[in-house]
Image (cartoon, rainbow over all chains, first blue to last red; front, side, top):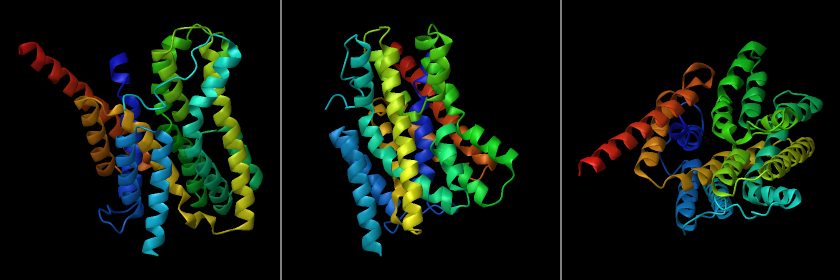
Length: 73
Length: 248
């Protein structure tokens, strides 16, 4: 059981993240660069992977999301 | 790049005050993600028809983040309370799993500690505290570390909700700024440190895929189904890996 519990946080968090990022409208999957959630999530994932710094990951992800949203108008 | 800030408890000293401060300090990066989330809750909840007092009271007594958003969203569509209670119950079922993971470390604490720290349990405090319990030295001071993390999260949540309510009054369209991305991005940052083994990666891939496939299940039940599928896949792949290694 203790072993199974190690998998809880990444499983639950991913199950929240993926629909929020890929289905921002809540009805269909938006797998394109027109989706600022996807762009922000990719930037955050790369930043997190390379830096292993949580604060930097959040800030870069938010900046990418807001910047991309602004670019798309 | 061996460990993130989150995975390194900064203070390992024994004094309650020092433990309290390190708990708060290790929670700081996660607070940054919670700030916009709290503000947006304050603005969205009042915009979706909840009174200002009701919004503040929900943050004070429910203290749940995503469940509060969902509850406010359901209230706005005029959903009946039994359905809202059931949905938020399912969304927060993960706290049962978090509690089970922490139980070995807190089961000997007196009840006057257990009840408040159970109430103050969040995704963020769980991540920070679970790490303190497993990496740091076992000590009676760990409860102060937990309290430091939890009270920092709680105080911040109340202040941000209040700020959001105030912002909502001044700028009724603040919801369009895109602060709703704060939750997913924070969770991405929290998930990445786990992706260190093949079974963990399989867990997230399966949980992610199932969460999309099961998205339209009633009461947000898809979240729980996806999480359980991911956990199951991770355990299976771990067993498979162990079998392969022993055979070689």
